[in-house]
Length: 67
Image 1 (tube, rainbow, N blue to C red):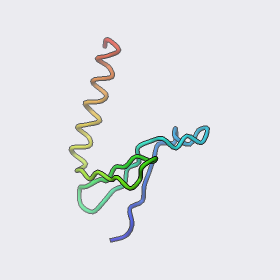
Image 2: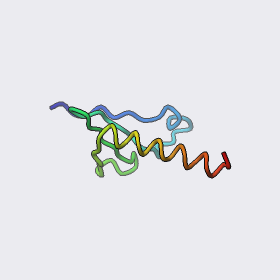
Image 3: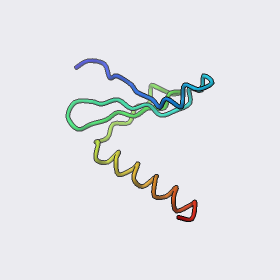
């Protein structure tokens, strides 16, 4: 297996800000997540569970905005 190719948001590049979450696709349906300021700590999850987390975060953000 080759080393993961880490991706991060293009917004994190502005102003040299390196504080972001990075994601890498692994074999099968798995993803790896890490904090750019602490890259040694990696969390592995499935694409489905990560998608559910993002859906929840979006809904919670809208709820807090009163939508």
